[in-house]
Every structure is written in structure tokens, then in C-alpha cells.
Image 1 (cartoon, rainbow, N blue to C red):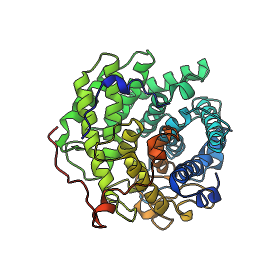
Image 2 (cartoon, rainbow, N blue to C red):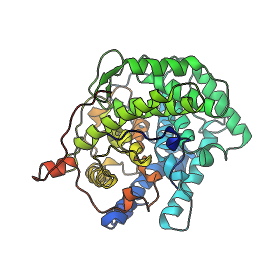
Image 3 (tube, one colour):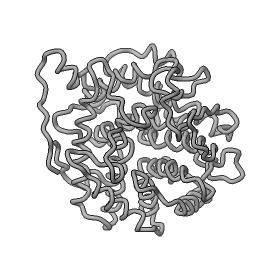
Length: 413
């Protein structure tokens, strides 16, 4: 494992400085991988942002709900789509805009995201999001993804907002405190919102941060794994939430003198260990272990792996190029034409449009956009080794082709 060398290197949250045919015809090689990722991000993001930027998301977004829907307020779907998408694409939007084809995509998506952010908290907008009614808890989750996006890209997402819009976000983030998180990964949703407020100098409810950190630390079961609550769950929530949000919460709070550097470093090393498993999940063919609930969230599960790539702290036995090569193979197997509806929205399922039965009781079309968390690595510029290095074989590809590959041992922290 890589030992985090220098906490200050990771503070603050700064990064190192399309149509279907665009995806299908992306050239091979390293440049082709990035072009493919950008085109796929564009395809996923555009239906949401092009509509919401004009205040037309509610009007035009077709929402499919799980067959086992639990009866919660269906208005949560729109906030899920926008919040989860924004959390994943924020690092990409933070890169400079230029006259390249990619730069033009970024400029368009950035403008649409900024406009959508304004709509989401404007009570006079048709796309004023459902921030909660005191009865429905779901908005806490997706407000957290928006707060995390602000932490990832404050200079392009938070600071450009006008004073009234920023004030309205602060109001919504504080009002959402009426939602008590469940004793699970949900504790971290409350904590990330409070941590964002802390980062901009607002008053916080410290207990919503400290309780989350202390509780999740108690749930550590060893070798890079946390239980999600008092009972261990073998699913991908360590990837969706536990590791990345705990690390981000600790990063902010350590920077403000509220928690100890050692806590952050320990959490980071645990995330590195978990990411080493994630890289080994990917088969030679580009499939991966599908277990547990929320399988419809697709490659958002790989958030720790791409987050470490973004921050240039992958485990030492994993090269950036093998992460890129492996995940590109996964994406090309997963995001086939029928994984999208005819109008371009993500379907309920994993691959194609025949797996709607995978959707859990809380899942809807908007929920699917948490898959965008895989795009964190697009916050690295095209010149970075992640993108520029040649194709590299990942662990399982080496193993099952009879080539040497690294042994694996449990860790003690």
C-alpha cells in the first residue's frame, strides 16, 4: 500500500493542473480512451443538464420507478438525477476550458450545470428541487452529493453562483438538518453537508460530523472493509459511500483543526486497501463482481479507485494505466445502446434494458446517475499518466493469461 505522504498534498480539494457515433467511433489507444470517457460522460449528462438548465427537467425527464417502490414521495427522482450527476462530473468541470473538442464539451456542460444549480434552489423555478417535507428522508442523500460537488470544484460551481443562490443553498443545507440520518452510511451524508458548510465559514452542527466519523470508525472490520451499520453487508457501499465520503469529511475537518491528521491518514490507507480489491474485481473480459443491493448504480461503485487515481495516490502495485484500461473495458461492456432509453436516459438495470427487476425499492431513473462517480478521473488533464501511458494489463488479465502478477495479503490497519 502507498502510505499517504504529506497530508497537505491533498488539501484543499484541488485538482492537478456527444452523440452515440462519437462514442462508437472514438479512436483506439490512449487518446481514444479519454475521448471515449468524455463522450460517454456527455451522453449520460446531457439529458439531465440540457433540460434542467432551462427549467425543464420535471417536464421532460421520463421517470421509471422500481416495481417494488416503497411509496416515498416520487419527486425525489429529479434531485437524485441532478445531485448524483453533479457529484461525479465536478472534477471534469474544474479543468480549464479551451478550444479543443473536449474543451467545448466541458464549456457547455459547465454552463448548463451552473444554470441548473440556480434552478435547483429557486422556489420560482419549475425545477426547484424537492429538498424535503420533513417526512421524506431521501433528499439528504442527494443534497450530500451536491455538497460534495461544491467541495470538488468550488471555483467553478460554488463561487460563480450569485449571492442569492449561495444564500439559498446555505438555507436548504441547514434546513435539511431536520432529517435524521439512519444508522448506516447515511451518517456520512449529513456529515459531508456540514463539512461543506464548515469549509465556507458557516456555523455547523458538529454532532452530525463527529457522530458519523466516530460511528464509521467503530464499524471498521479489517482489511479495508467497513460494515454498513452494526451488521456487515457484502455489497458495494464501501465504494459508493463509506470510503470516499469519510475521507472527504475528515479532510475538511482536519484542515479546520477539528479532527486529527492520524484519523485522516488511517482512513486514506484503508481506502487504498479497498481500492486494491476493486482493481482485482475486474475480469479479463471487463466484467466485475456484481453483488448486493444497488447493483443498478453500475460503475459508480469504483469511486474509491478513480478517486485515488485523481489524487495520484493509487496503491503502489496498481498503475494508473491499468485502472484506465480495465475500466474502459468495463464501460464498453456495460454502456451498450440499450443501456439507454431511446431518448437517452439511463435504464434501470446493469447492462441493457432487460434487467429492471434489479431495481431496489428505493430506485428510480434518477438514482441511476450515481454511476457518474466513475468519471472523477476525468479531472486529470489529458497529459497525465492516467491518460497518456500505453494500455496496461490489469491484475486478472495477467493472472488468467499465465503472466506474473502481484500477490495479495491482508493489512492490519
